[in-house]
Amino acid sequence: MRKLFKKIIKNSRSPEDGIFFEKITKILGFKPLNLRYYRKAFTHRSSNKQDDNGNPFNYERLEFLGDAMLGSVIAAHLYNEVPTGDEGYLTKMRSKIVSREHLNELGRDFNLIQFVESKVNPQHFGENIHGNIFEAFIGAIYLDRGFPFCEKFIYDKVIEPYVDIPKLEGKVISYKSLVIEWCQKEKKQFNFDVFDDTGIEEQKYFGVKLTIDQKIVAKGRATSKKKAEEKAAKRAYFALQEKIDKK
Amino acid sequence: MRKLFKKIIKNSRSPEDGIFFEKITKILGFKPLNLRYYRKAFTHRSSNKQDDNGNPFNYERLEFLGDAMLGSVIAAHLYNEVPTGDEGYLTKMRSKIVSREHLNELGRDFNLIQFVESKVNPQHFGENIHGNIFEAFIGAIYLDRGFPFCEKFIYDKVIEPYVDIPKLEGKVISYKSLVIEWCQKEKKQFNFDVFDDTGIEEQKYFGVKLTIDQKIVAKGRATSKKKAEEKAAKRAYFALQEKIDKK
Image 1 (cartoon, chains in turn blue, red):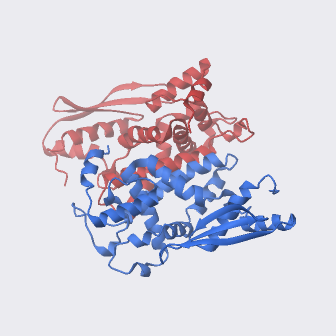
Image 2: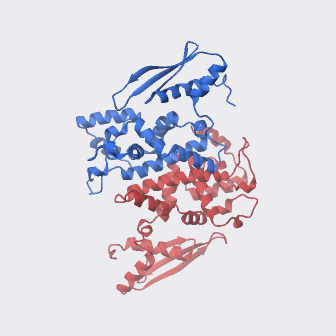
Image 3: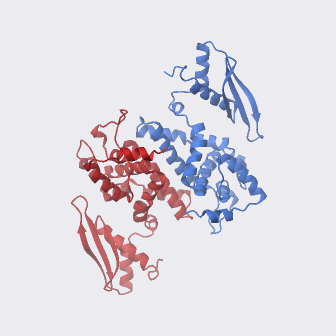
């Protein structure tokens, strides 16, 4: 049983915790209750920390937990979303979604590495550190707020912006090219313009707007210009879906 | 979003459904809301059934879902239960718990095969049918009642009676032999007696009581005499734990 009251008491914060709390809240979209889980999710074994019982205090066990939670939420999503997909299809699609590459992308996009506590420079850990701490972060959410919040985070911040079933199926390679094709066929003028370019060095954001025949049809915001264009194109594609032949 | 009201309406039952409802309620320990999920969990592909949208109506997709739910609940249990276990340990222990053999045992003990709808005699499916429909059953619980009930079922009906961490670690091979050793060392008389032997042919139950020095110290009930003895011994072991040296 989660002892909410106890947690709130424990949750009295230092100024440093205050900044951490704000940043984590922004990523989560809701408030964390016990920051200690998130601290753990970002503590590398090289820091040699231990908890009060002398057990290692680092993210490795949380990775295991986060991986399991991610697996079950993605499984339920695919089950509901693709009623025609058999067991083999569902298994394959889930592997694609939780691939090392994709988890690394997620960790990188959330810029979780800024939080890592370690004796070694985190830049030296290689690519997989991003995916590993992303999984650990999911595990921390589960421990801190339970399954429903963990599920909500995965839906809002992972599935909605990142999981694109037609693309994963290889049916749609790029929404940008679909939109361009359609514009060319329909003899419409189009433009992808970067209108925003913000964020600190380690976490840049690009805003891109897509204009078709002088009308802004969609906007996208992401950590690279290419991704932001693709997001805008995807939104435009779904907005224009009735006009564009899916085939 | 689950539409509870709609489900209750849909849930009007035939007499046959009534029996199915009672049996499922007994296994679950709570009431199912929509029997259709459970029907699906027990429908073999050989029955060639389809749902209203023309999609195959059988348990194969539910297996995928149940496997994922089982995986995440067991992961959380192990994470909390064994704070000293590293990622490798947790992964290995979970594999043992959700091994094909263990899932088959669970399916068999719940006698889920009695519900199977199929064109082929279920006896011809081989051992794995038991584990497969057990996983599908877990998937059905998730769809019917959501994660908290699914979690509750797994804790109450799988983890509590079946998951024995010291045994899985290989530290305890048999509680029966631990109890016998202790009795011999302490020069105490002991007896394992079958006092009950009930159930229909396909689902027999054995009740075993363990007597030490003319006093009944524990009882066990299971689908085989050996298992019932082990259950009784395990209970006795924990009851006598202060007296028995664990080493």
